Image 1: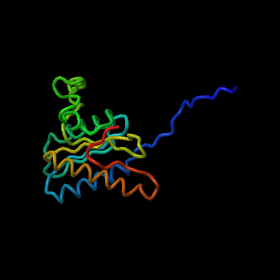
Image 2: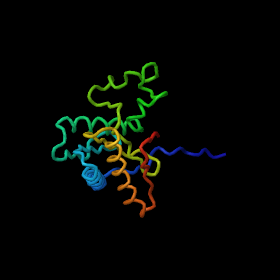
Image 3: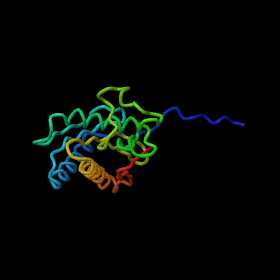
Image 4: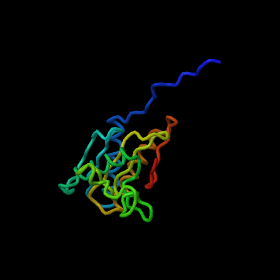
Length: 167
């Protein structure tokens, strides 16, 4: 009986600058629509920054916060607010990952505004939004994901766009 060889490589979808720019433009358009100045960060699947834009009037703290949200979403393959969602958010007191944000100081965010970028079921990066309240950051982030979805649908690809993403 022949032994089936296991694959040792995986074909992967890589997030490119053009996709990041598309998402940032959609995020800025939504931000303008809801009248909030945001900072938008896009990272690849390794958490490395691809693109960052701080809108005029956005807080000076926005870049660091948006990058941390994008990094966390990509690295942990979940929307950042899910870490603190009752009752089972893993970062809540008494739960398995309580204090996780202290493990990588300044790079790990456990509050609303970070979303993994999931294409064809694979996490290819993350988007972080900083500057509004939770509802505003969510609206801006999901608008960016929707823009990516609309762009790649014609190529037969899928993008998750809901706020609560967990892979």
